[in-house]
Length: 539
Image (cartoon, rainbow, N blue to C red; front, side, top):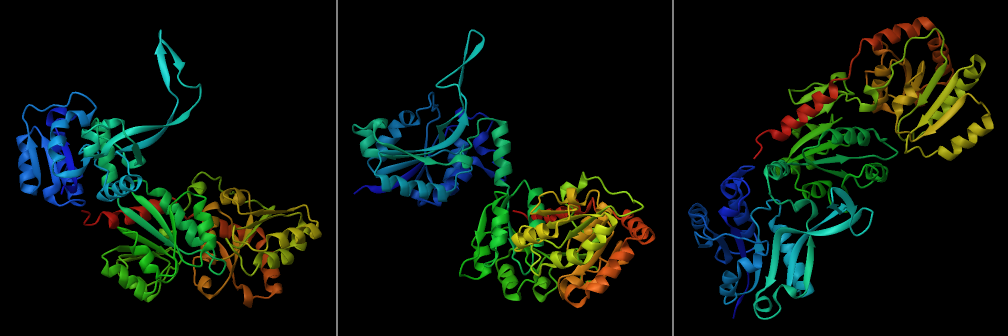
């Protein structure tokens, strides 16, 4: 009885488009060795056959323990590879029912792709399977020096063959059906690149050297959305590697926010977070969800996965290769711990923003309490300062984040208030524009204070909770009046502090202190640290 399947790898040196293409190392491995390794991930070595004209490739096959057929005069003269190999296929039909033709010139295909294509082929009971990719283009013909549209005068989607993989039913192919039988497609799309020149070689090498970076984030009303915003900002800077986001079980807000940026997202299910993360086979994990549990970090360590933790001052952080805590200035630690304002990453929108000059009088007040503002601090502060602003003709910009659950109630409140100088903005994507032209701000103690310092906006700071109160950057030395914990501060204290901040002398002192700060190079510094860790001992 014939065996079920074999894999044939055509390796004709004369047909190479780059000199010694098949034996030239791509990302550290030759094309022929890569193809053999892929084939051996699917079939035993005895069922892998290399068809070649090269003595050098024959030696590689011998050392790899796979079969080979060598014919020094062999050369393919057409794109019909089945016709070109018909003699070999007739011989193999005596041993095997099916043949998988794997092209060495398509190095991005993996053994997982081959197995998946094989399952589809069997399920559809087809005569053959061909790998294809989708392209969206307009087709033109050149006639008498001019272009004329083909098919239709519009862009259309086409399916074109990718010469990565063909699966053949040998008895049907050789006894009547030929290539005219039922052919099913297998879509490879981005993995369908065939090396047809040096540019394809360069692209494939870059893709093969890519690593997998997994951002693990949390974002929900109780903790806000700062972790998500920072992770997205850093992910935008990583273009050479694959990016995936993992959101903790309760982070519905984070899922919604990241989905709008089109990154792949995995949400933690019933399993432990470590299982979710390790199931993605990451090379680097960026943890941005407050203190990481020791058990979770031990699982990362045992799997030899490198970790960078943000805002982690718990025991789990001791197991990370790098900890970055920009909001905590006085943390102790070895060289792994980077803390303080030198590691705050400024979003790109702020780099081109117009920073504020010092004006004699406050004309515009900004009120913002982060992405969620669960306690509706915005409403309380607005009601305290609005009468003063109305009396002095001060415009109020009230800005709430996407997780602000009091939007409708605030809109009703503002309508009843009837102050035309108050403008409410919800879920803006251009916070720098909200800060442009602001003379004074009232805010929470998160990353907003760094952005205000960059924009030269002196501010009153009210912390949401004890952890946020430990963000000691928001102090007078950096241009901020720290009022205290929101729950522990009276309305009278907020009002009196606001009146004091309206005085030019105090604002001038704070403005000049902010004017001496510079965060513009910080993001490059942090991304450089991430890249160095990713490249450390890279295979």
